[in-house]
Length: 236
Image (cartoon, rainbow, N blue to C red; front, side, top):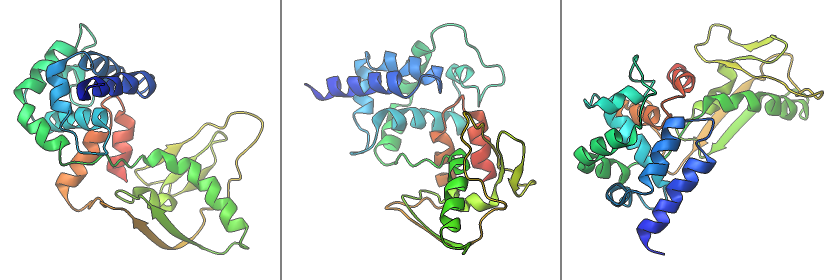
């Protein structure tokens, strides 16, 4: 199988397995891109070991959020308040990619896919409650491997609500996490947020949140329909 054929299969699988229910825009674009030799040739420059579809879509998103002027922004709900759902976005998307091909290649050949999904912390809280309970309520020391920007290490500072509307954490924190409990079993939620006395994150390429460029790339990795996720990232 030739390189572009393998890459086409990667984009099709990404559209079929990862996009449904998360991004109808990326689902449509990636299926079409997989049939397009010119854009596959651009995507073939993705950094080795990195998921080409995520990198490519993030590179385009990055350029648009940085102010690149093009009608394709009308299909990005986090950019255009007048978002359109009419017509096929791919021809316009293709036009943008060909116009900005050099910039896209530069981004996808040097950047990494490193996301911080803050919403995952809603699952961490019960787990840390169990860990604390097994050690007679002693405070926690945290080590995260693959921490990216380290935002999930700050889980104890966020605000949480579950199905019964009881709240844990700082009610005024900009990160407000809400989770629905389904079924008869309940997670082992604590009486209060467990105390953390030490935290450290390890990563081959840690994200420096004091670097505006690095933070902008994190934002670009958030899919355009996930406006709430982007807001949580900003708040964290």
